[in-house]
Image 1 (cartoon, each protein chain N blue to C red):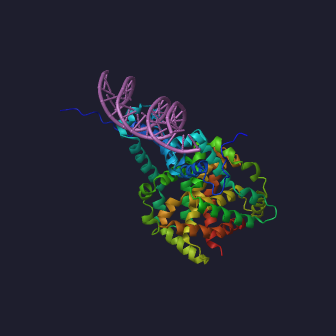
Image 2 (spheres, rainbow over the protein chains, first blue to last red; image 1 turned 180 degrees about the vertical axis):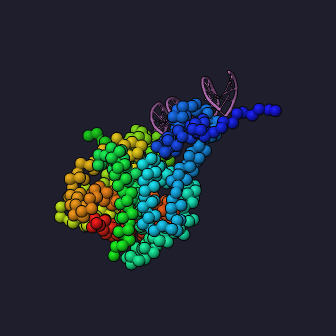
Image 3 (cartoon, chains in turn green, orange, purple, brown; image 1 turned 45 degrees about the vertical axis):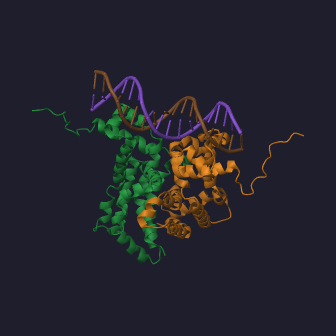
Length: 212
Length: 212
DNA sequence: GTCTATATACGGATAGAC
DNA sequence: GTCTATCCGTATATAGAC
């Protein structure tokens, strides 16, 4: 009986070489973007040799694609679940979205700027992959938003509220280097500020919806 | 009397070679960022030769610095003036800021993502250059914001409102490739949507300030 | 699978003719 | 000032030994 190369039992702590490279790639790519990232840096960050990177992933671009798909999925996370839940109020949904996204963004603060930058560089390729459109507008969330918007009788398109919600959650992270400097906040202070927004955002949006 | 090289009368239509290169550089850099931009592309866009670019600007980085300084100044535009005006109400200031920024952003939609990306790549270098901090917090605008915030008695930091205002203005442009695809909007339709926000934003912020 | 050494491509910059 | 041709560093990718 011919012995195969020992296939590692996997995922005790997931530090196979492949996983190490991916982790390093995620870090470097997300911080500097595709063009400014060097495969050498990724290899070094992973503590392995440059040749090995190509052995596992063939090319910088292939590696990038994997990371990007992953990041996008990460960014979409529970959004789909929350947004589709028929059993919760609009207010509850917004609170849940704000809360879980802010938590996630505190963990991965440069994810959004990274994704948006790369989308700009490659719109056709990436926008589709997010697969958001398909269900957002049919979701429970959006229906509730439309109703609330209609009830307000101010004739404002629901899309505006969606943009505002997303912006209030995501924008501070996109602009954080600027804001942090402006207000002279340490990372920890900035994060506290973001924590405060978890409950505020839902309140604000609800306020907007009720406005005449 | 020794003749000097004929100094062009200048600025009839500002298409000196130098100006053409700068214009091309602004376009390419702003669309693709520093790292992904190739001097060859800039030269081609300007309809001149690569060597000429270096003749005028010495290096890619020098050229970039010039464009960036320019862009930042552009982005700061009348902000300082509006924000410092002692004679207008908070509401009027916000309306004016939203209105003039949205006009500007419709003209230069990828300016903010560009600036924010490059700041991430080079925080120390760029953030200072904006010279915002010095006066924002002492400005008439911020004082009014603080007062209004205090009057609201909800104990929310004024900074939150500032972030929200900036986010509501800027975020849609930062996320426009995504939003446009999501809502299936043509550029022209997207711009109309942004026009609507000119008056809405001030209303929304005022609403937030009045909330209990 | 992992390394060292090397081939190859690309992009920024310069030399030198006009 | 403007061009063509070329240099040279740097970054990706591969060959081949272990």
